[in-house]
Amino acid sequence: MSAGLKPCPFCGEKTCLWTDEISPKVWAICCSTCKAIGPESEFGWEWAAIKWNVRPGEHAAVQSVLDQALNSGDGAYRP
Ligand SMILES: [Zn+2]
Image 1: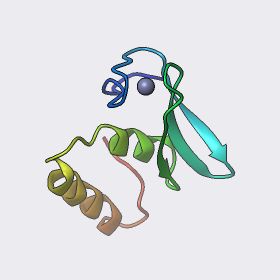
Image 2: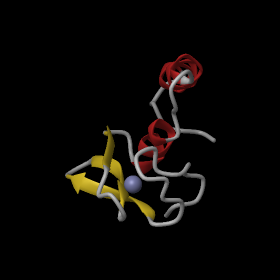
Image 3: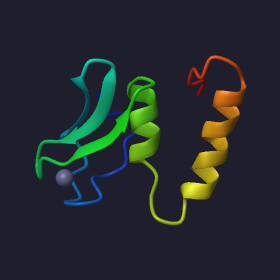
């Protein structure tokens, strides 16, 4: 599952990225090239993917999306 993921911010890897359940109910994006793991998400891999795609300067915009989703009720991610 690498669809929609931005390139690795550490090594630039574009394809060898996947989401993994790194511990029970904790998901993160993993880079097979530089072994980067993160950011962790307790709301499923969709949240990990959203957080992964956040780049410097984009935190405010993404945070508002997260807040909207969380305030919508059950915290489920809705594309
Ligand atoms: Zn990498």
